Image (cartoon, rainbow, N blue to C red):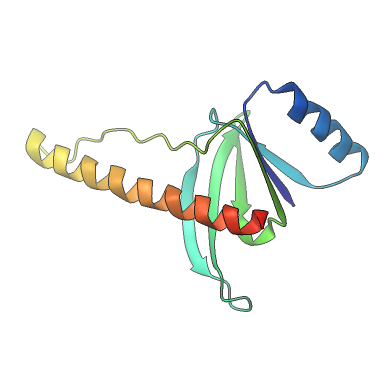
Length: 123
């Protein structure tokens, strides 16, 4: 499967995708508008490579992607995005701030890991 990371309305990517459809190639297109959710990080039992399962919504359908299934990765004018919403965990704003900062740092590192995994697919 080919993973395409691009802007939502990007005409060059639209042309490439029309060719992929003609050639019956399996692909997934993600843009910054697609907020990803991390599902699982694992080590592939055969390749011993770190892989990740993540998901995003596309027209209210949940799309689940396993990086192990990605054979090619094409990046064009976008970035992966993670929507991190502040959550109230307690009655203390200080405690909430600490927990939300921790969530932000954790998600940032997971996003860095996903970018690393995808960069390995591009080589």
